[in-house]
Image 1 (tube, protein in one colour):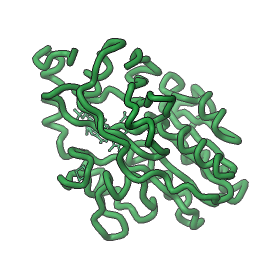
Image 2 (cartoon, rainbow, N blue to C red):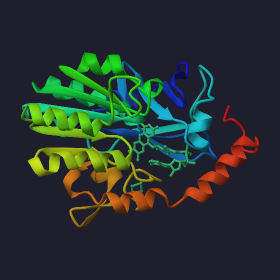
Image 3 (cartoon, rainbow, N blue to C red):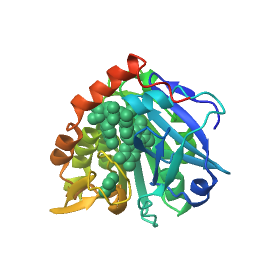
Length: 274
Ligand SMILES: Cc1cc2nc3c(=O)[nH]c(=O)nc-3n(C[C@H](O)[C@H](O)[C@H](O)COP(=O)(O)OP(=O)(O)OC[C@H]3O[C@@H](n4cnc5c(N)ncnc54)[C@H](O)[C@@H]3O)c2cc1C
Ligand code: FES
């Protein structure tokens, strides 16, 4: 594994030597990793591939991502399973928008490059809380025909949300398809921009996952009135069919247990995984 690089406050980039994943990975897929025998399995989007290396970009939100950020250069991860999930539905749509919010931007350039490779014109839209939290801007500019940036506080690009930029794009020109990747609430709000226009819109869902292989049911989401497992049926789904309120409720389910695990980590009871 190469050095863990800090991209912004609490967001880290990690290149992992995983030839079996790198060889088969496609845009939109993810991997599940476990730091050591006792560790939890966590899903992370495959953000890029270079030879035998795969890149993940993660925000430290809890115990496992906190430990991952502390792994030294050359350190080891116990196991990595992937690529998992269905790849992005790549077709020649025409003009596409790829919209990334927060750490969700991690997966955006891979999807944008793949769509462009299919002959689409790709408009990139990036949204972040504030300039120091904006990641992969240059990479996204290289991957897209045009890229727009918004920050909630106006410290970079337009002041406002990714949804505001998308609203401006659809007012200006016809869009054939859109991808939205970010926090569940951002995907819910942003996909409302394309709904009345009937623009085909995909979101990459991030429910709590355990095995990542369709066995445990923890990642179930309601899409079009049917129960789907995000790990095997997704993670990309038709945005306008997703029950976001159900997803948001399920994401809050383990808050107490996660808080307790973090307290243990801070008190050094869990070790640093090295
Ligand atoms: C398909 C998929 C791809 C993902 N890709 C990325 C990625 O590229 N980069 C990244 O930073 N994160 C990604 N996530 C979220 C990531 O898996 C979680 O942040 C991670 O599992 C948290 O583990 P933890 O032990 O550090 O935190 P925990 O202690 O388990 O949780 C801490 C906090 O994070 C929230 N959380 C836990 N799991 C998730 C989840 N699945 N989605 C959203 N919030 C969660 C909890 O509700 C809690 O508030 C992805 C999730 C999925 C399902
Ligand atoms: S994570 Fe277990 S079924 Fe999807």
